[in-house]
Length: 115
Length: 111
Image (cartoon, rainbow over all chains, first blue to last red; front, side, top):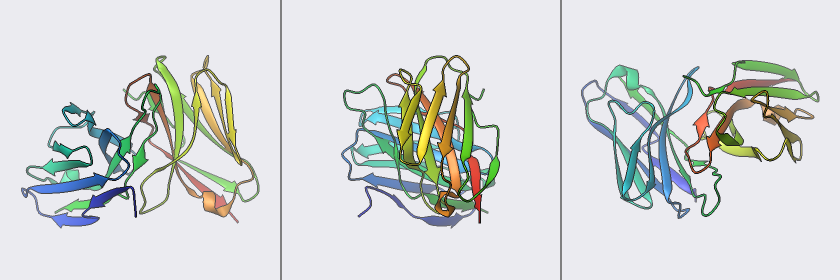
């Protein structure tokens, strides 16, 4: 079984609809992240959470919100989807422990299309 | 303001030759550097990393070189194999901080 899972894997929705992307992990990591990938723009950080009570905005948080329901679950919401939010979305986890360095583990991605 | 730059969107290399992927960074606080590999329809996977106290780290066919004075790192793959065709992301972080990714370089290994 995959350590980091994302649901749904593919989603087509219409402009103005609310949509939630979910991420679950079995790695026991405290840190979780949401990224989006667009052609030519690489991975851009939307939100991140270093523990259950910690939520931080990334570089492109406008139009998105998140909820950290538990250590293992981190969901991303688009309150009113718009076409330029069409992208590939990745969830990631990490747990540097006592180390100052960190390595992230990614889910398989959710392809979202907003018509 | 892009802190991690991969200036080559794509690179084609003959099978069996050396692939060299380059990355530049601007933040002098970065002290940990990583390379991720991504196949289509999959999430990125960690490939190799290097701490700023080193200038080279090797893992099998993959070697990462770090030049701190030039704020430059490179990933060498030798020999290149067909399965190495993928998008490679360079990433960097400062102590206790989040990781910043570059835009990626698509590597094509030619038969």
